[in-house]
Image 1 (cartoon, rainbow over the protein chains, first blue to last red):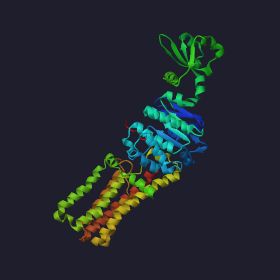
Image 2: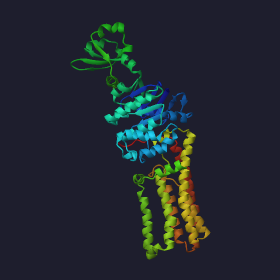
Image 3: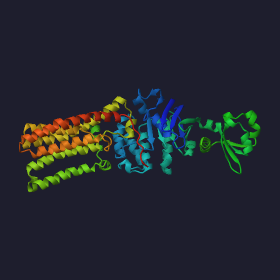
Length: 285
Length: 217
């Protein structure tokens, strides 16, 4: 389990401030607007960045005391690039793979072959998608317990996306691994994810399983008159146009006794992640 | 040893030296060769001049080129490797020391052969060996454009110039010039090289943690 305890980090004008637990054995999708702190959160989880306050605890292990044990458990795939760009994929595998007890060079090269990436070309000379494929192949080959992916699929072709999904499902099959991936493609979370973590301006907005998310947040469509009559605290934001009004509600805050008569005039449907992001960031803006 | 050698050799990428704008250093060697040809004409290929260039200056030039390929900075993946902080520091320091060892081998072996063949006096031999040893320990701080690199450049240039002068005096004994060279060594080169020691240790400390560099898009 990854525990984030009272984590605070100043990031320019914004402060990242959150506490949460990411359970083991699940796929957790992380979403948020650009600049909401997703990459910084990953940097904090992977120890690349130190927090100002608080700590990250992975399986009871802490940075500063159990670094070796933590790094043996985690692997990161980052849009920013990870490996030595001047070296080829094969050279990177030979140089860095030996530090991991579970690393298998043969399986790394097999994965590269499967993903149709030439292991003998310098990483810097590969396309963006190919660079991510190399990183992904390297990460998988280290057999991590926690696989952290920072917007991996944006540059993947459809053929590789399928292979990527298969690889993730294979990794998750024993129930002992955890995948955390940040993405703007919300359909990826719907397709793969078990848990959803939504952050906004460095704060956790929602962390829970997708079922709970769909129960908690609902999209209401109907006349503005009825929408305005519902519990104000439950309203996240609304979108008014001349034909109808759409509004996002936190159903945990709805007073069903008072609001039921108005709710009957509205059409409620489970919120999609995309809708929720739209309405939430609209409200804050 | 095999892994360390692999790491050392994998750093030799031509694009690195071009990207670092260090390509200019490659022309210094050519300038020296052309200068020697102009000075000595047909005698260029005589033993003394040729030996001086190949046995003394070429290894020094190779050491400087190697420095461009082996700076003390590491990619993001290094900071995610399963190792304790002590192991990370040990890896950084031992990579540096391995590079120094290679520099010493490249510099000292040919130099010793040249010194024996030319039968130079002990003071010249000691001076030239000291120059090569000092040069072997130098590193390029992580950014060539940083102000502190001036110190490094001054040490390298001083080592090259004094070595060139000593090579020219292989078969002559000019006491005053030798004395002056030793004065430069004691008053300038050694103190400057020692002041670089603090920077080298700072580079180790700097390399211990990952620094995010915002890449231009």
